[in-house]
Image: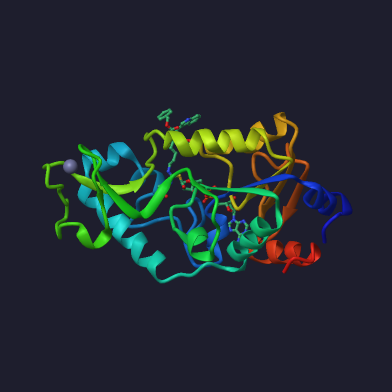
Length: 242
Ligand code: BV8
Ligand code: ZN
């Protein structure tokens, strides 16, 4: 299933970066953003995960995040998440950059994680930035902070800037790695989608794992078609590090 070239690149890599998207959590039962079941009450994710939408209709956006939290609270990491924990233990230097907000990499045991799009289990005040645990949020359709500001999920909505530290550390990691893996992402959402190309431009060997072709499939060194929850454990086995 895996070429000697790929296995040698992984074995010889001093620094590995993995970028994950919604696809790695699909086999845990978390709907992807652009998959066939990506609709909720006739709204598309891009319409709901949207900073303008939150200001215009915070009650609807809060409803969607409560709905997604309920799903995420019932799911567990899958073999794809756990395989990346093994790869982190194996590699001299490993950075996991995720676009996902579902907390599953942390639950699986990954350590060096850059959460580019925040975390659905966290919340913050739009005015004073005070953090709120889920059980601290006032019970209201539009919860408010003690300072009067609106509380919102601490995720990066379309139109929001990404957390500067996470983004800068991710760009640095992409530019300085020997091997870059793009896993379960359609590579459409910027600026995360630029990271695989940035890595390639700085000399990394780039591997894609996705069960369909994406906009970067023709640009990477190797594109492995299939499910990440099956391919990643097979890769760990082929490396003898299961
Ligand atoms: C920003 C958090 C500055 C919330 C998300 C440049 C050009 C064009 C547009 C822009 C640009 N720069 C900025 C923009 C606007 C916008 C953008 O990129 N739009 C796109 C749609 C064109 N970007 C932003 O707004 C970003 N902010 O840049 O700030 C700025 C601001 C305004 C204007 C200019 C600049 C903020 C983006 C972050 C948005 N927040 N999520 C939440 O999750 O609730 S994005 C959302 O999409 C998720 O994080 C998701 O992870 C992410 C990316 O999607 P994917 O992860 O790839 O998921 P998707 O469903 O698309 O694909 C799944 C893939 O997995 C598929 O390929 C499928 O085949 C595969 N798959 C499925 N199952 C499996 C599998 N593969 C393997 N195994 C399986 N089992
Ligand atoms: Zn506040």
